[in-house]
Length: 265
Image (cartoon, rainbow, N blue to C red; front, side, top):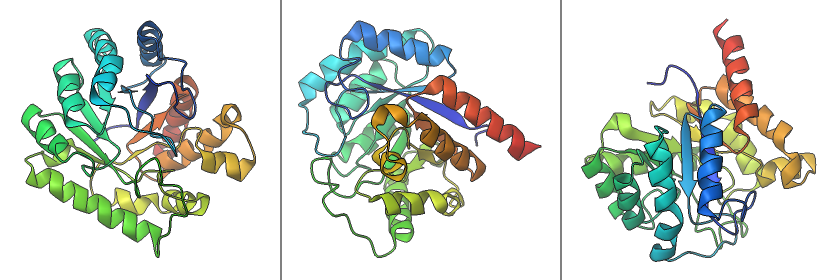
């Protein structure tokens, strides 16, 4: 189990991600930014070539491979632990062969079940995330009777599928999917009861960074959500999350370490 909370830095090699779309579409820029995040304290750099923002359209496999594989090869060769953010088994396999150590599947095996086999055969870590629907439609009036219970059940079902595919229990992490088919209140409820998921015994990964529920709560644009993100990260550390996925690595590493110091005192 984790001896401390890990920070996962986000690198989107895309033209249309909600926060940094287009900034790192050039491979040199993506590589430089990935290495910068590692220097700032990111334990893992999460590299993705397909936007999963609300309303996003899918990207074909060849284009996704073109975007991410050269970046992963270079960043991993520098000794950085890399995760690949993809829902495609072909991309996951190529990324692992290029040096990635973790597959971050926001669909939780729903879009391409073969990802589980790829992870099992390679011995890679796997992050499975809860998403209601698909990026193109997920924010169209999402409904739950009990968001915490329903998300928890679906994540544990995903974990069972991973185990059945031969992935070791220690290699499986769960992500409640903040912002993926949830209203602001759904997101706040999942965060409020983060301990419910932590208590199931799998590492918990949460990605709150700059997301719309922060903007809606504070009435702020994407570039003004650092403090709101910091508050959420501090809460996640206090309530037992194992990995926080963020854009602003330098600032959030400080938030994580300070919160841990208080928690351990």
